[in-house]
Image (tube, rainbow, N blue to C red):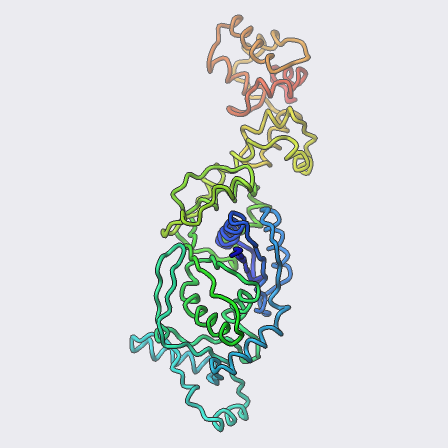
Length: 451
């Protein structure tokens, strides 16, 4: 069997890290198995679907390097859904219902008041042909429900283990709206059959949907004489740092914001998300191949993982510290920095986000107002500055000379020099930063001048 999985977002908002968990887990599973990854837009919700969201989803996936082997758009497949609907009707598994949303709401409230589950009562099955004709003459248009068999529904979930439901405990789902448009429950199953999806890996909020869809898979397979029920795996949903749920409509931790506002590196985010919710160590990976090699679906736990922005930033720093200059040259230029290898190697150990490089560019190439506490000490140090050209050895040679001349050592030696040269208490090693600052700026700053 060739593994085939899918990521099927709806273009009704920006992707957030919860959506990414589904995309990444499916992508890693496919790549580890040498299988196929389908990117499918579930865009039949025409009121809420937007082309700008579809474009943002594609942009996010490309930024992350999650490539796809096949692409499909549900709005291109209405003819196929219509065929499936007619076959289900012919098999007696779809039936028309005429209750309004208000009437269904009253039924639901009445059942809940009786402490009973709000299951549809199948009243529509009792309607005669004359009843249906009368209701339609009144202007009502039916929605269509799938008639569940009152039988056990069982499967072995690849993450959660054995699962069992019974059809009598589930409500017959609506598959077709009053306006004739198919709903997700139907379109998803038809697509999964047509594209020969072998594994459906998604959040645990879909477990009950899976129970319903297994019967729908079986009904369509019987009606069309083909296909197979996929294997299922349901992972826990990610919560925010405070345990709150995530919503793409609220923009919670959106991937677009992480890229454009937070400056997160794609491999840092992927490294974090690939291990979040497992007992494995979370470390930065420097390639997609390394992520694939280290992936194991069985390592996903059952507990609710919490997304920790601080942990992500730690990984972001690790990824940046490992990047060669060639990998960031264009991005540094986009920040307005005419940087070179020497600058990058000097500052990258101190970066959490790439944009932080701008601060050190200003230290080495723009006027800085020095922090001066002992002007006499700095004057003596300035007098000992060697002539250029400077190398990585210059700092050590100079500070040794200052130490011998003044008797200062340790913090008393290095901190005043750092504060004068950079106006900061911490930062990149001055042995690499000093040659970038240059002798002219260094002399001026040691003299207390903004330079």
